[in-house]
Length: 474
Ligand SMILES: C[S@@+](CC[C@H](N)C(=O)[O-])C[C@H]1O[C@@H](n2cnc3c(N)ncnc32)[C@H](O)[C@@H]1O
Image 1 (cartoon, protein in one colour):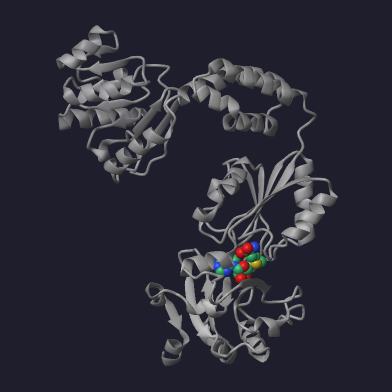
Image 2 (tube, helix red, strand yellow):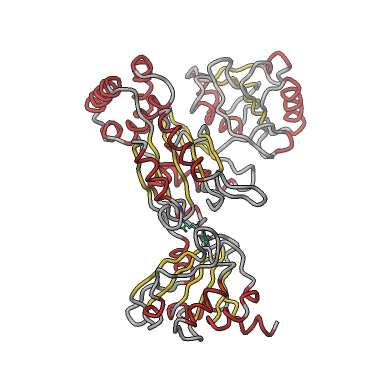
């Protein structure tokens, strides 16, 4: 059953359980965790249900309920354990559009009962679309441990201050930011620790401070999205994504990274996609400034680290010139992720004492001249070159290194889609790369790691590496 989670209100008619046996008692008990009362349709009931009737939590109605007894219910659970009767109840409920569940008969259900973590006002429902109730229970146990037992008190406190906050702060970003600060700050901490007076005083003071502040100004966060794997996002980056009103993102931002954005956030792609042009840098700068001036929290999300070949410097200059408040959130750059994936240290006390980050092409797109570099000095050994954007110029670069004195059998590793599921690694020597760059069949995005460290991979990873010798034989 494909499902979508919603939270059903029990404020109107009570939910109905059909059946008076043990199964019906279990279901009634479950519903009573959230419903003030439950109706049970049965002629005879087990003692547990009788006790609930006695306590005023359950009302008995006649067995074999008809259309009138089912109409208008928030939900019905058919638990008579009599297949024919459960099917009959399910058919009536479905005809009336009343959500119905029949335990262990998914074909008769229009909703599934989730595993629940109950913190009063805060409730978490876990479903696996029927795939694995055991997995749902395990997740529930984990969440029970992770979620603070006093979350309910925190939610009640927020409800208490909803009105005063709405009166004093304009709706939209100012109000949302106020609440984000409350939940991340000392007031929430005090409430969770049980110091309710302090929590109330802190929120009261925060409302006064926020109301007295001149109209909130927007800001821009330049955020590194890492090399692709969302697990490599920093916690700060995740927080920035959650706080953003608008996110301008590059093509190389990995799948799953944007899942951390708020549902209401506006997502604007500005990177170059296949067959389409990227938004010119000046337009991106203008958009960042305009949105921040309109009071929005703007995230400029860039693959890897924003300041490694990401034109982050240009955006920074434009934002500073416009007087916009800026924050930088660093990210894991592709070269570092590639080295980590291959388990090679970029510096190594025996073979590499420096690391140089290089672009594989000039600003205009042509082959790199490396004029600004003393390649001959680097050729002496003991260093690592990390080349970005060098897929089409790899052969040219390798030839240039040899001409500058690098030894021809120096290893070079190319890593495509580092950290992603389709990561691919190729090992060669720079002589082989210079002579037959096409044999590596490299595709963008890839980084090239030139240096002795590229020859260090552990044997466990060598199987993953396609040596050029093998390519030649193929
Ligand atoms: C415009 S640069 C941006 C670099 C980015 N700011 C960073 O720190 O990784 C784009 C180049 O980064 C490299 N790159 C980005 N993501 C990559 C990945 N997942 N695997 C390999 N190389 C990647 C490629 O060389 C690509 O051509």
